[in-house]
Image (tube, rainbow, N blue to C red):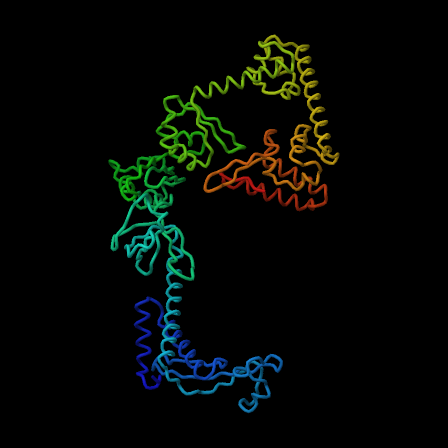
Length: 543
């Protein structure tokens, strides 16, 4: 069919109809039509030619033109679409590089194959425009809840009609074994919106912890208004969840506001989450207090917090152990997610046995190393002395506070402790040298003989070897494997070397070797201090 023989206004009417159906600009459809007609013309006149089509936006008249661009002599590659300045003189009065020679060419007749090709081009361009429009509309809605209608199910994934586009709810983002039929209404959390060459761009979730947070925001006006803030959320989708809240108005109880009159507010959220049990917990700046709240309904006897390891020990009464741990460890796992801490739970009996074992081992250490009787060794342990270093180098006045210890006894104790430590240091240094440790590492400040021996056993024998270590290799750290945190034992972790101390030692070694400029070392340390100021309680050890 010839383009001239068709009703030219029909092009504009078609563009308007497609634009309305796909909810995109008519201009985009017309540009797609122009492109498709230009391709059809190239197949008629020659693929090398630069054929352009312009559709009049008022009349629908399509004009076909051939364009040749003026190029420098050495830049002409396509003689059908490019000409030199000399070749352009018959057509232009004063041709310059970049000018264009425009010739009108007859409209093409669209055969069956050409018409089909043109249709494909138009559909492709319309699909691209539709995806762009959908992305622009939803990109700022990530992190919010949306209502939709189920269209179909594909391999366990649910395709949802969200009004002006489609979204996908993957099977691993559904709660438990919930199933949907076409035309069912569904509410979900927009987890991500991104550009993709094919398929949906809007990804939904019903298992994300923030889905529950957003549901509470919808049900509790105080949260929406900012009077109450949700500080943390942890979920075991479809089974149990914990949410920590704080009120910035002393007259409003954050837990009561979230529960609502006769539980109406929390029940609305529970109903949406397929009966998921929700523990609403008051948030507290003090981590120990917050953890005690997070382990509810279990009662806690004592909390021991290790700040360096970001780890916490919780002691509970014997009868409360199963409640604190929860079915399949659910309660303690959710509390750990909520607080960002690794939690070890002990019973009173277990803690008592452990403390007794520590007491006995320290007593035995002092009896053997310092040649003391059991009673005197127990006195030292009871006063808080845990190792020989503390006895050897503590201020003598602290020893004098022990009943029965005078100046001579204190001096003798410290002398014995120092003799033992010096003997141990000499033995460790001899062992390290026997393993091949070089003087460059021995003389490095900050490494004790015992540390040198531990490093040598792992093959680190020179300052160069030490400088190639990562901080976490020395101090230990945590890595995430398949969603679970796994402990990496450090070579010097048993000597209580922190991650920051390990980093400083490694960087100092690199400076001594000339690998790093000292000014760079200062910059890195400042950057680390800035990172430490950030509120990141669950930070992993890095290289």
